Every structure is written in C-alpha cells, then in structure tokens.
Image (tube, rainbow, N blue to C red; front, side, top):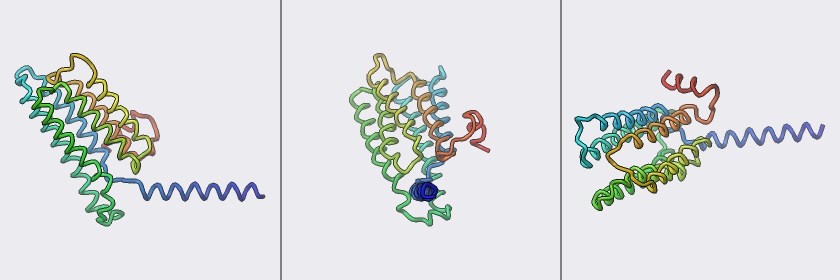
Length: 210
C-alpha cells in the first residue's frame, strides 16, 4: 500500500517536472525555416561551383552573404510570426530571450569575418563560421529540445577541423554547403518534432513539410 503511494507520488512529481519544462521550452524556432535555410546553403555552394562564376574571394563572399541574409530572414521572420500570432506567447517580449541571446554572436561573426578578410586569412572563414555557430547553439540550448546539443557539437567539430586542417581554401564551397545543409536539416527536424522524435528518420523527413 505504502509502495503504491510512493509510486503515485513519484509519478506526480515527474508529471509536474514535465509540465514545468514544457512551459520553459522555447518554441519560437521553426524547423521548416531551418531546413529551408540549410537547403539554401547547399544551393549557394552549387551556384559557386558553376564554372562561369568568378573564382574570386569577393564574388564568393557576396554569395555567402546572400545565403546568410536569406537564412536570417527565414528564421527570424518565422520567429516574428510566432511572436505575433501564437496565442500562448501573448506578445511577451521575455519569450524572445533565447533568440535575442544569439544575436551578439552574429555581430561577433560579422566583425571576425571583416577582420579575417582584411588580414587576407579567408581560409579560416569556414571554420570560424561553423565554430561560432556551434558554440552559439550550445550556449543557448537550455530552453531547447534536449537532443539539440548534437547540432552544436557537430558544428564545433566541423569548425575545429576546418580551422586546423591544411590546404583549406575559401574558394571550394562544398564543405560549407554540406556542413550547414546537414546541421540545419538535423536542427530543423529536432525543432519540428520538439523532442518527440518518433518513427523512422526517413518518415520524419518526409513528414517535415506535410
């Protein structure tokens, strides 16, 4: 009898913890926007691989800047839509805190990009972008689905490799496109299913845009 009461009490505590975590969970990121942004990165890499496109640092920077701009508009556009129209948010600016905490990293990334380009160290850009993005993912993961740490570790590992690997060239776009395509699709699936990943991976991908 006592054991049953203890079991019921523990079940109630677990349910209470789950409810608290659900209320703290940040749901402003769109899985679909992340996946589309990742696809844009891959398209950008494919575009840069066209033989007719100029193989200059400036020309490649223009395309990667456009990829970043599209991804930013997609993700923060979806965030604004969530903030304005989700009845659970009630336009409470405190709910935007996790997304706003990621903005300083974007400014740092921009400053580092400018510094590396000016110092003629563009071969470090891919590694810096990946590492900074991964660190941001890890630093802001607390209110996000638990499994999201995988995305941060993936970006940091890839970034470290491209920072340290010899013979990395900024004019070879596929590493950047493939890494961000993979990372953003995995992150998109995690956000779309919000830590309730059920069924096969293939089925989740097929259902992402249904």
